[in-house]
Structure formats: structure tokens, C-alpha cells
Length: 103
Image (cartoon, rainbow, N blue to C red; front, side, top):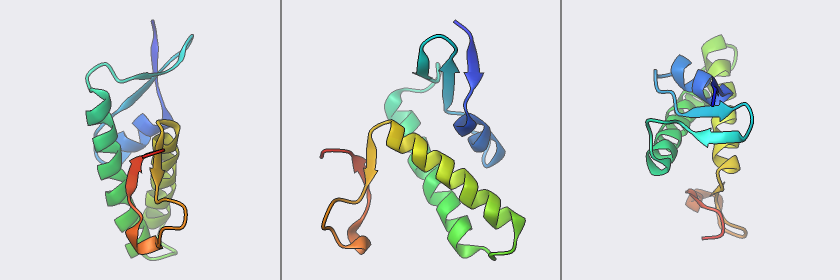
């Protein structure tokens, strides 16, 4: 089976040197061969938090800020694809946190 790096892997490499995802050409998404699913999600959550801080705390006209926001958005989509949700219906925004969807 051949592996190709996902956008997530590329973003994580560019913004911290951690690569967490691989795509099998014939079967779709598969986990990175060196990380367990829980390690993989933990790293994604950590990177999303770090990138969100850089995105929200940076200058709006700074290319580094825009790159952090774009990378964060890619990782958020990856978390959603893995069944993770941010906040619950009817929950105040200040209580929102990442959790497995449906829990």
C-alpha cells in the first residue's frame, strides 16, 4: 500500500514538524503508521489550539497570521472528519470544547 501525505500532514509539518496523517491511494484515509488514533487526535487538538492562538492573536494583515488561520481550518476539518465536534447545541460559547461527537 502506498501512502501520500494529506494536507493535514503538510500543515503540521510546516507549523511544528509533526506529521499525523496519511492517505492510502486505494482505500481513503488511514492512520499514520507511527501514531495511535488517540495520539493522533491529541496532536491535532494541540496544534489547533496553538494555531488558533496565532490566528486570533496576530495582525490581520500579517501573512503569518493568515497562514496560521488557514492551517487551523484544515486541521479543524480533519478533526470533524474523525468524528470530533466543538461545542454542543444550546451550549453557551464560553463552554465550547472539543469532544467526540454524540457524547
